[in-house]
Amino acid sequence: MTEFLNGLLRWWPLPFFLIQMIMAWGMWSLAQKFVSRTDCKDCKSGVEDRGEKSNNRLAALESNVNALPSRDEVRELSDKIGRLSEKLGRVDGRLIGINRAVDLLNQHHLRMPE
Image (cartoon, rainbow, N blue to C red):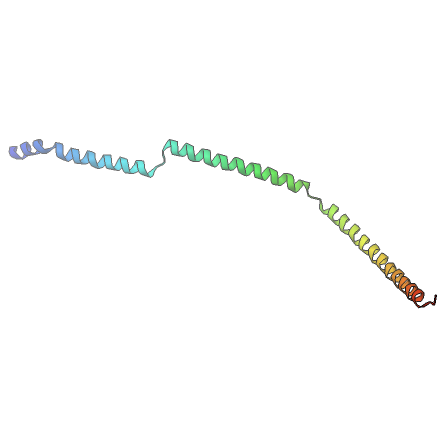
């Protein structure tokens, strides 16, 4: 029994050393799995920059949308275009009649003896 205790006392640093090595490896592995503070700050600043750019783009888009005409203005413009189209149709009909009359006058003048 004393020999066993003497052998154990002689080799006890080895198991403790192995246990400490395993614990050190475990701590190193955990450190690799988690994000460091500097990496977190860098990532956070990148996200904040993208957020600020997105907010600027959104504000520009909102100002552009606010500059667009309203539904009532578009409807009013459509009505005006419709009335203008009707008037142009009437003017076109009159011009066709005038062109026909001018053609008849030209034909008459061309047939007249001098």
